[in-house]
Image (cartoon, rainbow, N blue to C red; front, side, top):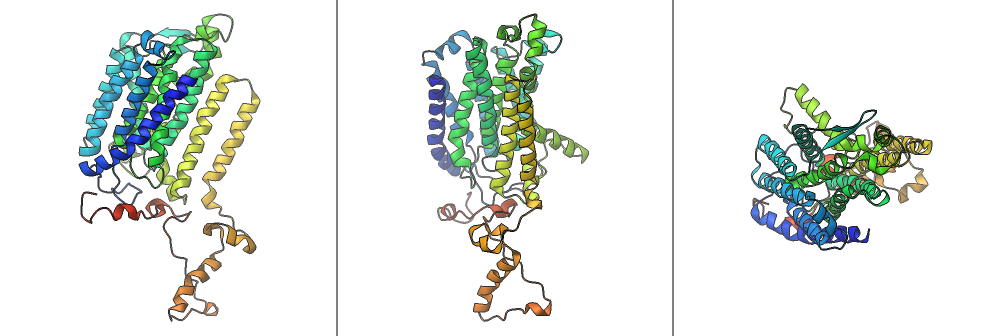
Length: 450
């Protein structure tokens, strides 16, 4: 565990320290596209954050290769080299897209090639544990197609959810944490050495996200871009592939008996990891809904719009930060709920806890629809959105009266003026929820590439 934590810390430190210089490089290189209709930020923000994340990945693999215990992963398996090869290719495609906006079909082809590169080097699904049947061996073509499909789905799911500051990196970090606990339990508790690469991949992925998050939280100073979102999606998929189709369920010895019984006992674990719908359930749901929505309208599945889950949270009244936290909550609930269920699927307390937390999540989701009003004596201690509208209207009309403009008499039946919308106040959605950042405006002249 100490070596995994050291690898995580080194990856996070390298990513964090390189993000600042990468931001300056992105500004100089002009990797600051104009604000699009679907964007929620108000100022052009540099991309190419994936450059720092890729070098953090390289640093984590380099450190792990020189540690006593983790060095065995590189000696006994070719999966770390396969991951690095596929990551380098998908990262290069993402960098080109961040700078030149390449076509969506070209990116899709690059994703499939990156997955094929990993398959050629041994990172592939060899068999599938089927409930009631046992291990089903896959042919070379079946394993290749399933691996490529899993990589492409995961990459695009993460890419689709990358729409708010800190959203994609935070959700992937939560998924990687749950995945790390599962893989480490398989490797350490049951002595299954085949789970060691997946444990290493998830630790490095956590370090990449943790190191980048301080620069990407709202208001973001840099975006990861496709070079980062596709990279972390590929690393997450590589961990799922490594542990799903190469760890023998019978080696876990969770159930004394036949191989079929062992597979049946581990169904709560293996089915979520086959197509990681519980680990990245929210991004996958967003991906499926986006494809259905765009196809129904007669558009291309790759056509951008403002119908993603995070956009809908902003539309119903959530602020930028609260929308991100709600997405974090649901990702953590699904990922760690599946993890807890895999440890003890017979416990009703786990199911009850998931149900209660789901109810709390729904209440938070609908919070803008039911805004409570605090007593007058407590208004001075609460945010403005919980104060009464009359008090806000009087405060807004006070400067007008001081300027010599006559106040409107409430007895005449004229409705009270609504309080002005102030950027950064909780309850304001969309781009207006962003606060001003004069430090960027002071450094550049108007009309430049920034």
